[in-house]
Length: 116
Image (cartoon, rainbow, N blue to C red; front, side, top):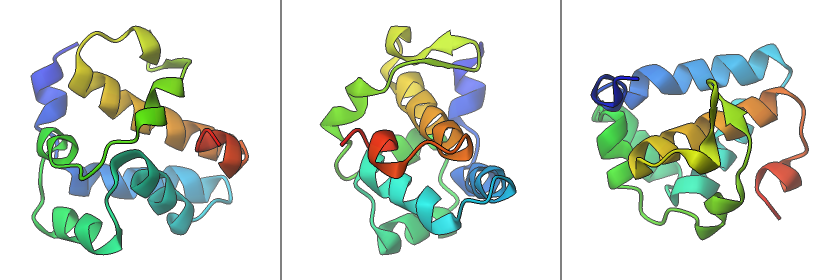
């Protein structure tokens, strides 16, 4: 896997895909946002600023205000990799978000997605 290629992808391109995936399964943009806020510590304003600035994934995660310490509770397979076994910290953060959006799209309750 070419991590640098992934890291340079614009979050503003990925974000609508997360929303689209959720909405296809009857979920909402608000639920996607709630997951992003929980995982990264962004709020509505700071998330919108990151989208407007068209930051890449590397910048998005490196500038996250408060990455959730409970993210380490996220387990399972996403894109053929076990998230808990990904050694590269930045890639693990990217895959954590992918995994949470996947769980939302599969209908998992928000309390379980947010590891409450």
